[in-house]
Length: 367
Ligand SMILES: Nc1ncnc2c1ncn2[C@@H]1O[C@H](COP(=O)(O)OP(=O)(O)OP(=O)(O)O)[C@@H](O)[C@H]1O
Ligand SMILES: [Mg+2]
Image 1 (cartoon, rainbow, N blue to C red):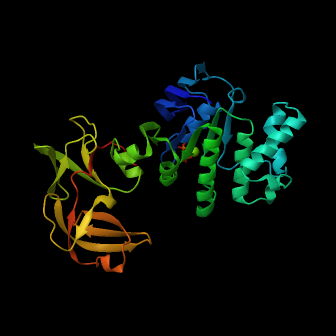
Image 2 (image 1 turned 45 degrees about the horizontal axis):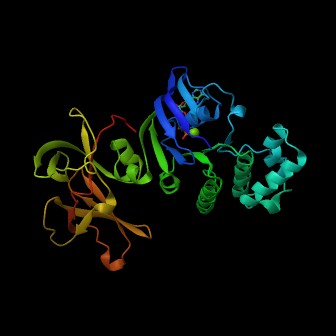
Image 3 (image 1 turned 90 degrees about the vertical axis):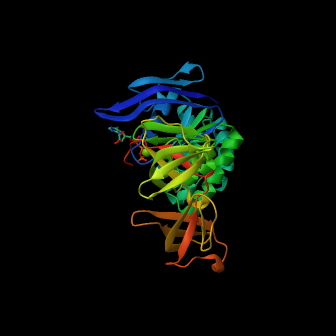
């Protein structure tokens, strides 16, 4: 096992800066995820950890060892690629044994290690099957076994589940987590699927256009986004530009021009992200914190609107409330039966709890 230190890493491809000034520590035994939109630098960063790319500037260290310019085969990292990169004409055994043969291990040792790892990924009955005759999920597990069998200090996985259907993906998520706990291995996992990131990771780094925006646990990233990009990228949110108006006791008041109204927000670190005075601000309102009622709601942060759409998804019901010509707010509730669904066109009151919203600076990104 290894702790990975990335220090002031920049990677340039010609005039393209794929990764900019990245500082990151991935702890020993941690399940660490890189999350972000296409082209934000996730694969490039993973490849610099694996040694397939060297950084233009900056340092890669595993524990105390400087690995910046060390060749991939000398790093003891395993990598699982998005397209599996298996040898289709070889058997499961031959695919998994490949890395051990390269390392010139004895035949009997190879046999033992391969059998063992195939049991772990529950493929032992397929040991002599040709890889091209396996399903997508089975091939994915061969790729995992091949990476695990060399007993890497760090396992790097680049969107390993993106080719699988929803059900298999769910199964493989559990499988990967089980293996990670069993081996106690440091895992770096790349995905642009936020549910995958939130449900699997110890910590997540959110990337945008080559820059790391935030590092934190799933709950920190979701509940305390540092800017509007992170708030928007992780989960759903209603984002409205606001300006600071005044403080009233232990609350701050922010004015939204598009709403034509003000929001009271509790003056805590949970509700107001760190920002500079010059920053443009937005309020982030998660759909699940909003209360809607046809009856009167007493108190602050109550706004009137008209239900424009009710969307049923099975476990949840999304209600869109039009406040005015430019603002429509999305609210989400668990399905509590047909009697609770609001009718499209009905007039409602919307309550936005002052202790469950977040003021965030705008990151200046157009993504
Ligand atoms: N070998 C290369 N040569 C030139 N540009 C590259 C190279 N590899 C990546 N890039 C560029 O660097 C940026 C980051 O690419 P990267 O592959 O790291 O993105 P990613 O976050 O993995 O995206 P995706 O989710 O689509 O896989 C992109 O703008 C990409 O076009
Ligand atoms: Mg990629």
